[in-house]
Length: 94
Image (cartoon, rainbow, N blue to C red):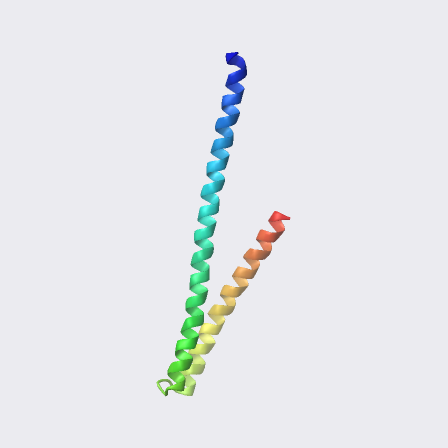
């Protein structure tokens, strides 16, 4: 009887370990994606705030164009990384 329980016990422990590792991996992935989404929304918010400041006369046209160009590059890079990540996630699940 002990010989039958030993493989079952090992299999149960292995399954539990795999389950825990998967749960930890999913949690890390969620935190990473949440952080990326927050960064992207911050860049988008900054563009809006600078647009408002420019409209109120707080920034010259040249200053606003410079800031907008830099933030647009940053936002585009974030979107490119996000799209590439989504594509790799989709291809790995297929």
